[in-house]
Length: 533
Image (cartoon, rainbow, N blue to C red; front, top):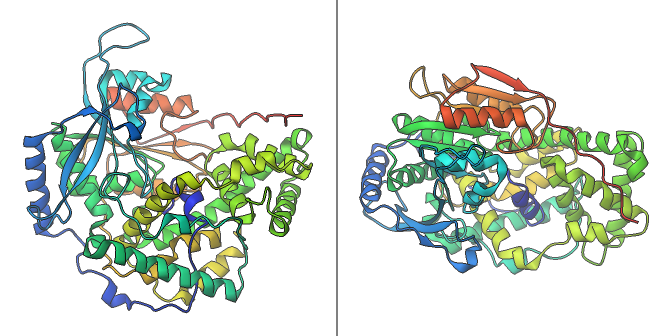
């Protein structure tokens, strides 16, 4: 499930589509276990004990990581295959800023509470920059009590990196993005999807099968041990909540405190095909929120005084770009990728509305600046995409007949055209995936199996729709759910809502949750920014 805006912007432009390519029979593609094997459980215990003994040798970070001197870095050895803990190992990069021990507001000493480990989502996104948040005002109280720890999950960045194709082949300049693709477009996209899946197998071989969410959860337990923690304090955002949910199911006695920020629906039947259908439907509602906001500020942007008229203005821009790309670089696909970020984060709304307004008035520069592909980011984008697909394709069965994808998404696009087919092209390599598929773990924890955990969710989040938070809350007995009402920005921890942040801080510093459920009023909508003259 695409749950980081940078991932979506990169992935949605690049790949795939329908029907001519070879299919893998569903029965042959799914591995047997619906629950982790005993050998993998033993392997995790062996790896964790080894990591506890070895620790992590933190020191200065590599220059190319571009981290400040307050952050130190190290590496963690984990098994590629947990069923064979003494076999091949891979190394994950880890970053840390030590607890300051001082409350900057009061000047008082603060007891250290251990490590707070973060996974920011993805799959395919690095958390190496998380420790830098310690200097941000909203995080200073947490940084006083906790070592802030980030890491690059397996496959990401310098952590046994994956790649499925030459990154330079992905950015091909201005591209179309039809909301209702023709049969010819679908065939061409399917061929590209199948080719990309083959490239993943050719470049990674048998190792490809070991890039899974379950192994990400096992890696997290080895990291816990290496940090010297008997129990884990964890903040997972977006896809990171799924890793956390698996961890809570596999290692309930190892949980100290756990925050699920913008939760993925963990129901096994939703991983991952149905979650992506739900995501496409939710993006249509969030796109409507942006259009309604722009209409309220018609006096600033001139895009239309109703949501429908704003949509018409967007269609005009899209059609013009199809005929003549802006600056020779930005076509409809690049426009869509830029606008998709506005569906993730409403703080993008003023800039995106200004870019559309300026373009319609004859100035394409703001649009080109926001939507142009950056060649220097191609390798990182390809790595992100490769890991995203490896994890999600390996995690669960997917339809292997494009006719199923075509039927489901043609129906969905009638009411949700904004994101539906773009989401298909991103995920379609999973129809042709060469590695075995797992059966998703049945995430759950009974009463008193876990200490209290905290779920944060926005009602109109499109990337991880709200029903996912409700489902996770139902499955983890003793969890508390904090809802930001009538809001849709993705990722709430440390964001614009003071009420949500107060619950987060009370939980992480004091272990206090607000009963079973609590709600917060929405954070203020962004103020319009007048277009520059």
